[in-house]
Each structure stands twice: as structure tokens, then as C-alpha cells.
Amino acid sequence: MFKFQDFDGKILALRAEMTAPVARIVTTRMPSVPEPIRLFYVTNVFRYSQSYLKREREFCQAGVELVGCNTPEADGEILALLISSLQKVGLKEVRIDLGNASLLKDLLDTAGLNEQQKGSLQNLLSCRDSVNLKKFMEQNDFPSKLREAFLQLSCCRKLDEVTSISLNASKYDKANKHLGSLLELQEILVDYDIEDMVFFDFSLTKKIGYYTGMVFEASVPNLGLPLGGGGRYDKFIEKFGKLKLPATGFALEIGKLLQALMAQGFEIPEETKAKVIVSSKFRNTAVEAVKLLREAGVIASLEVTRRNLEKTMEYGKFVGTDYVVSVGSSLKNPVTVYDIKSNVSRSVMLETFLREIGGQS
Image 1 (tube, rainbow, N blue to C red):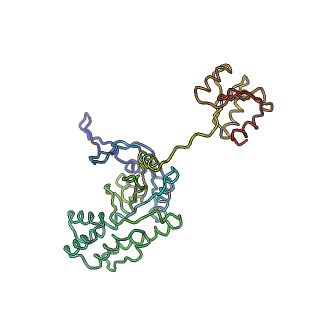
Image 2: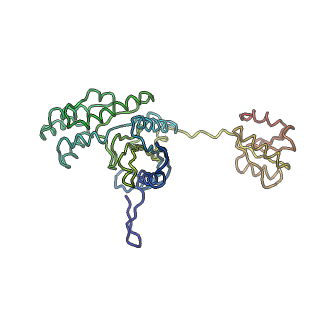
Image 3: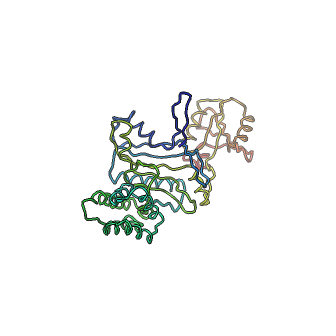
């Protein structure tokens, strides 16, 4: 995070993410809004990074937050929206890696490890080093059931594989509850037909520590960095006021989306809509023609400077217009269409012209 000192000695910071500002807005300006509250944003954020990877410190972020609901259906909606959003922009082979922050935290707490040992164990899980993971748990006297759970969870790759894992002791009640929520989420992903795009990663955590449930990252092959991610944060909003609202959401980095699209060979489609300037001595008829053209999906503008036809043609050529349409006192009569590229003019009914250029008359 970038921090500065102002002239009064106060510490200021540039926003590193948008969840905190959204939480503040919900608490201060939306206390009586019916739940769930669905919000979205597109804005710049700032992060300080010393990574050897080339990463921008200011970047544009687009995200959504679903506030006021902690059901598996809410989590499923967020994941479905994330996948749909990535597919809509043109990305292929979208993958979501998903974990549960509370599941890992509760199991680490149950193991009775200190902070350094927890960090070592998480590194082994992240590297999927099962050999040294077994050695670590033996050296630290893990109960056999807990040891088995860690090994099984570290081997799971899909949410439905979690069904075989159960911890039979009251001290594992919280962990079993989290396992149950993962299975409920899997059923919802099946309903959305996206279960094959979501992969389970027991070791997945976030550097931001307010997550309380599912956490996830979105990626595509060959990029090397996640496009974005998010998760559930049920106890964060109450830090900004009296409202105790559960919430979940995600954010995507626009720059990384563009990098991913370029890596996949995506090409921006050429603009196919015709561009037309309408010119007339009869303002009301010209306005009516512009409205009809726009309603039909044509990019139409009105000649508002009262310049003559020759000047209008020059201007149209300069701004890349396809046609200049000159209309008389009534659209029941033919209009004159000037094709700027071919420099050919003809008289035709406006409805016929619309059909010819692909508009819906």
C-alpha cells in the first residue's frame, strides 16, 4: 500500500482495493436498502509491489459485490457471473481455483502450531509436496485423523472429491461445516453447468486477511498471473459501523484481461454499422430521419452546422462517414443518398436504404 504524510502530519493512503470503500458506502449511505445489495464498480487502484515480475502499480479494476446474503446460492451466483464475464469478453479456457479460508485456518488452529509452523505447512501445501508434508505432520505429532484429512484435502482437485472427507470429533465441527458448504456449492455449480471450470485448491489463501469463506482466483493458460479473484467476507462490513452484513464478490484487472486476450490471439471485430449524416433544409424531417436510422441500429448524426452539401461531404470523408442522406420535406418521398467512398448518388426510399445497409426498418 502507498502511504503518505500530509502537511498536517496525517497519514494518507492510496486505495489498494475497492472492498473497503464499498463497505463504507454500504454502512453510511445504504443502511435501509433491501438486501441483497448488488453493486459494481470500475476504477483505478494502487498497490506497491517489489515483485521481480513486471506489474503495474496503478491499474484499472472492475468488480462486483453481493452484500447481505451468506447462502451457497449467493456464492454460486458470484462464481457464475465471474465465469460469464470472462467468457463474454472473449476469453477461452477459463479456470477458477477455489479454496476456503476458514477451513484451512480452523484446521491449522486445531493442529496447535505456532505462526512459523503454520507458514511452513502452508508452503508445503502450496507446493503439493506430499512427501515433506507427511514428514512435517509426523514431526509435529498430528493426530492420525487430522493427518489423513490434510493429505486427502491436499490431493483433492474438484469439489465433489471433498465428499469422502470427514472428521469425527467435536473439535472439528467448524471444519466439517466448511466441508459441507463446499459440497453445497458444488451442487449449485452443477446447476449453472460450470462445475468443470472450478478446481479445488486447499492451500489457496489471500494476502488480504478479511476473507471468511470461499476464496478464488481466475486464470487462463499461458498468462502466468491470475486475472483477478475474490471471496466471501462476512465480518468485514461491521468494522465500518453497526451493520453486520455478510458479503461476497470479486474484482478483475482490466489490463490483465487485455493481455490474456492478446495472448489468445483475440482480434477486435471491425465496426460493421453504417455511419450516416442526415442533411436537410427541413429540420423536423431531418430529426425524424435521424431517429429512424438510430432505432434501426445505424450510427446517425444530424448536420447541425447548416453547411452546404459539398462541405458536408468533405466533413463526412474526414470523420469516416459512409453516407450523407439528404431528405426533403417528407419521408414519404425518396431521399438522396451520397456514397462518400464511391462518390455516387442515387434516389431511394429511406426504408429501402435501411434494408440495404443492414438496418432493421
